[in-house]
Length: 163
Image (cartoon, rainbow, N blue to C red):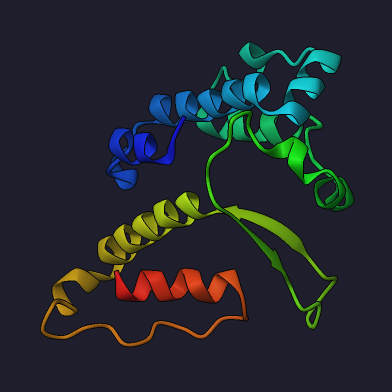
C-alpha cells in the first residue's frame, strides 16, 4: 500500500470507524509479511495467525499486536536495515540518529512519503483540536510551532509549520 492511497482512503483520521482502523492495520501486516524480506522470513518461520490478532475491538487488537512478540531489537534494525525495505522499494529514505544527550542513542529510518503523510495528519489534528486553520491563514502565517532536536524531527516540524 502506498501512502497516497492511505491519504485517499483515510482522509479524515478523526472520524474513522473502528473496523476500518483494524482493517488498515491488518493490511499493513499482510503487506509486510508478503513484501518485506525480514517480515516475510518471520512470518514463514513462526506462522503468525493474523486472524487471531485482528479479531475483537481495536483496543484488543492493539494489545495483541504488542503482545505478539514481533518487536525488533535496535541492533537488528541498524545492522540489517535493507531487510526491512519492501521489495522494489522506490522511495526516499532518511536515516535519523539521536545525539544520545537525554538517553541512549537512537537510530531510525524514515520514508519521505511517510513524513509527508504524517505532516498532513498532524496538521489536521492541530486544526481539529486547536482550530489553527481559523486563526492562521494566508494573511497570518504561523511562524514557529516548537523547537525540536536536530535532524528529521526538525525538518518534519518545518514542513508542518509551513504547510
